[in-house]
Length: 113
Length: 114
Image (cartoon, rainbow over all chains, first blue to last red; front, side, top):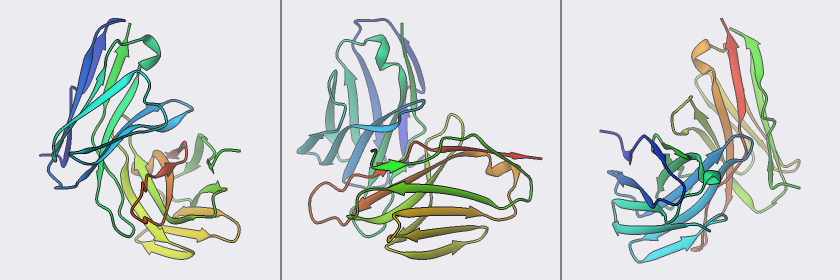
């Protein structure tokens, strides 16, 4: 099994619908992140969580919400999807310390029509 | 000025060539420097990391950091078609208990021609 699992892998939804993207990890890391990736814009941080009780907004949190259900689970919700939220979404985990990198999931390709 | 600048490419080179990928940055607080490789429809995977200035070598890959110039490089020797991917640089400051989120470059798309 992958260290960081994202579901679904692909999703097409209609404008105005609520949708949830899920992420689970087996790394045992406390820190989890949600990014979106758009051509020409790179990776942009949506939300991050340093533990179950700590949730923080990233640079582009408007229109999104998150839930940290457990150390291993971090979900991203689009309350009312709009077409410009069409993107590739990545969940990542990390552990604080020198030189630690992020472990990314394989991504969810979301299309809002 | 963006915090991290990276040429998006595409950069196309013949198999066996030496590849040089680069990023420049403006934040002098950055201490940790990383390179991620991302294949199409996959998540980025950590390839190399270095702390502060200097070189680090791992097989065909060498990461180089020049903090005085705020410039980092990734060199790939004997490039292979399987190296074709997007390479993202990433960096962060020293984690002092606060947020230590990575700042990513936008990625360079590399194509190795067989």
